[in-house]
Image (cartoon, rainbow, N blue to C red; front, side):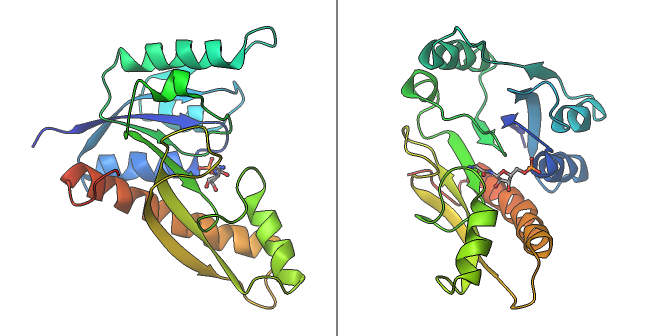
Length: 200
Ligand code: GAR
């Protein structure tokens, strides 16, 4: 079976990238990661990729560069590799159509909250605070297609509820969410590759 070609975009620790790398290596995900791109030179995920000999690129937006021009350049650069899927695994830069138009229905984002809840940054902290205020009883995660510039919004591929326990610390909740993400992201990409799931 030919392997599906992935490009993974990260901005930080890359623990979800690690889950994808492990699944590729174990053969449970029939995919090859062509490239890992970070918009931050300090992202630890770059080290994770290097230690598996996966090519990496740092694509930092310079202050004087318009965000749409940056997106265009990044899109063209990645499109040249002809990936089947572009996975946003903790990528913290909102992509415009200048990027997305290169990969219609092929950009997949992971977000640590349920659809419509806590879009943007610090989603786990905000869910934890909402729980403490009595506004929510549980939280969750989602994987979705990125059709446009909506923030953490788009056709949902998978969700999973993550419970919050009354004596949870933020760290405990973060750990539970990340462990769930690692499993759900790999599983969702596997289902997309096999054609079991359709991106929209
Ligand atoms: C993950 O929790 C992911 O859902 C989140 O960033 C984290 C990256 O962790 N993404 C967003 O918040 C997107 N809005 P990682 O670098 O350890 O994979």
